[in-house]
Amino acid sequence: MECCCNNFSVNKVIRRFASKAGNTVGKAAAKGEIKLLSAGKFPRLYFKFEKHAAEWSQWGFISKTAYNKRAVQLANSQIGGKIMGFTSKQGWVFRFNSATGEFLTSHPNGYIETFFRPKAGLEYYLKQVQLYGN
Image (tube, rainbow, N blue to C red; front, top):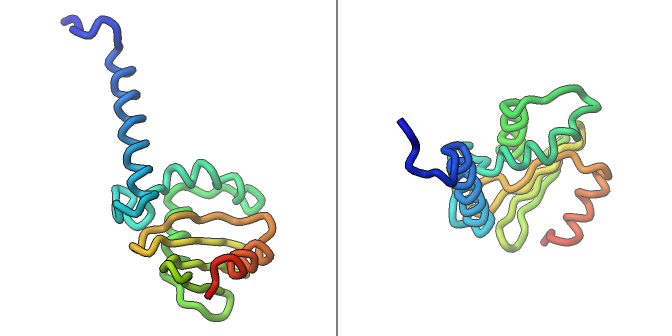
């Protein structure tokens, strides 16, 4: 059976659709229009993992599942001990784990915006406090 779409292969069409859908979802998530997607509390998990996974290389390999688990764990952590944090006037939640160097921000709607290990560690976190703290 021949495909009726002579100019496009099926794979090409699927890739184009997925790319456009991903861009639309990403923009909506960035605007706060979407709280939960297939990645649960971390709708931009796959994008952020690809961007930040290399930061874990000095401690060994980290899988997407482990990355997500650590992000959710930090997002749900109470401030105290090794966990530093604050909520901005706009409702953004900031967390920093001083033992692991992990930094996280959560959108006021509750989903995780970003999770990574800044090179400057505590200095980076303190800069966020200075910029966005109450």
